[in-house]
Image (tube, rainbow, N blue to C red; front, side, top):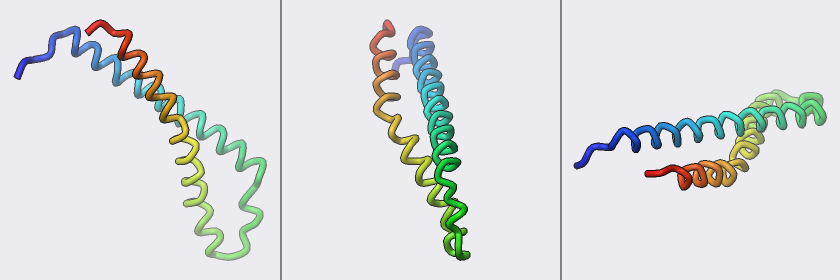
Amino acid sequence: MDRLTSLELANWGALYLATGLCCALAATLASVVLALALAQERPWRDIRSLRAAALLLPRTWWRWQKLYLLSTPVTLGVVGSFALSLSW
């Protein structure tokens, strides 16, 4: 198997860095949107039982996951277009 050239290694490193930056931005934006939605809705005021209290954290996590996963097509588009702009 052939080894990667220094240019190819640099390109792969740049792709991983771009992906990490896009994912960090998506996680931050998902967290901000979720925090604003929770502050507006105040779901903790509807807790009437132990079961409802126990389900608040998983429901909040699921909402964050849905918000974060909505960024997947954008992340793939940005990183894919960046990859196509590199000279391999």
